[in-house]
Length: 63
Image 1 (tube, helix red, strand yellow):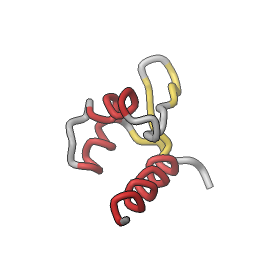
Image 2 (cartoon, one colour):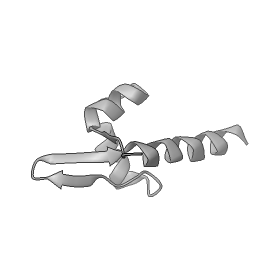
Image 3 (spheres, rainbow, N blue to C red):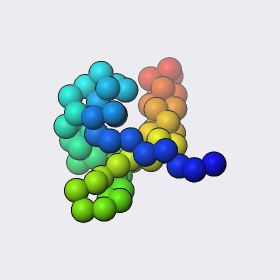
Image 4 (cartoon, rainbow, N blue to C red):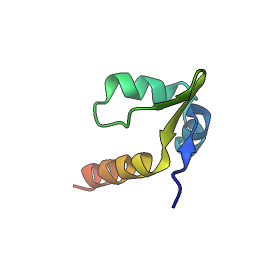
């Protein structure tokens, strides 16, 4: 199955935060997935990595 990629705006919408917040999370949270530069001016995150991060975070808050 092909990989799905999300922009910073899509991640912002997913989590209800400003579109620049994912870039801050990259700097401040070592567990947040690193973006991939697909071409000049096109940086995206793998949906599968974002979902894995979500699962990790939900386990951490459930304990």
